Image (cartoon, rainbow, N blue to C red; front, side):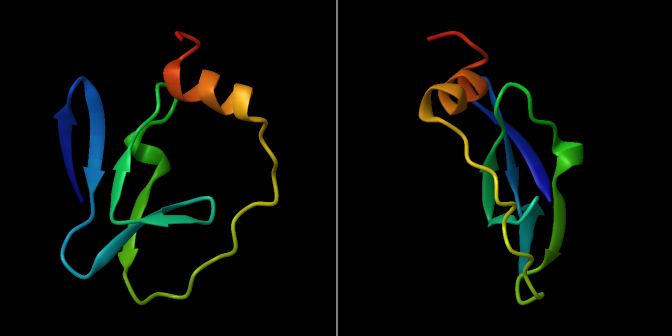
Length: 72
């Protein structure tokens, strides 16, 4: 996994043949939100068995607040 900064945001990029995962979410590239941290993500083989996502609903307004750090 490599870490870059783009437009002030921390971006995680999975290595070749790998994928990033956290709480049932899988992606090759992750743009971290204000309250997220690289330590919350781990890199696994792209063909590894996947966990289902957590069954947690989040209202759009709360999601936007989390992503922007409350600055809209």
